[in-house]
Image (tube, rainbow, N blue to C red; front, side, top):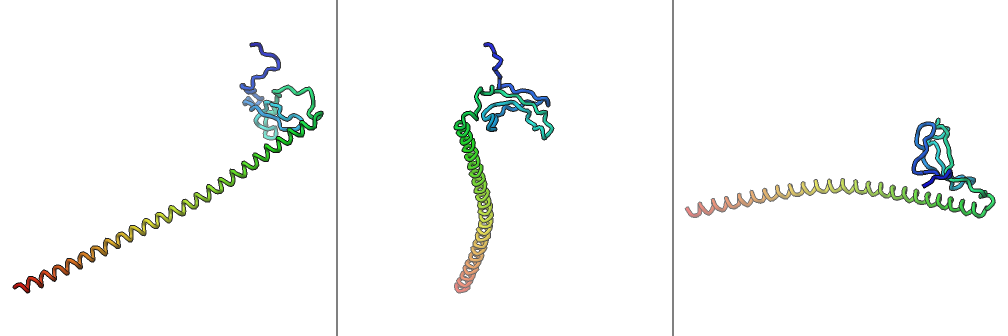
Length: 153
């Protein structure tokens, strides 16, 4: 397979002057909308080297010659941004609901612990009452046995 001059292997990223691999990016500016390029991942403002190379050849016609196409692409771009904003808001709502449910779960677990402690206390009190009743019954039986024994003698 013969490679032409226009062939660019996007699988292998360029190295910038910082000796870092450059990510493949896509332009969103109206004049270069959709064109792919390799660029230094550190911006010039943050001491990046400024390396930049277009991947896709520049079209021979300007998008400005076809305002309806440019307008359509801009509308699609805005729609995508709106969808992204809606998804971000939905994610925030779901995270807020999750946090609320986590708080309710924590409260429920604390109530469950308190109820278990109360149940344990009630069971202990009931066992204590049974023991007292058993002692009383035993004492009553002893008294009856003693009375019966002396009535026999």
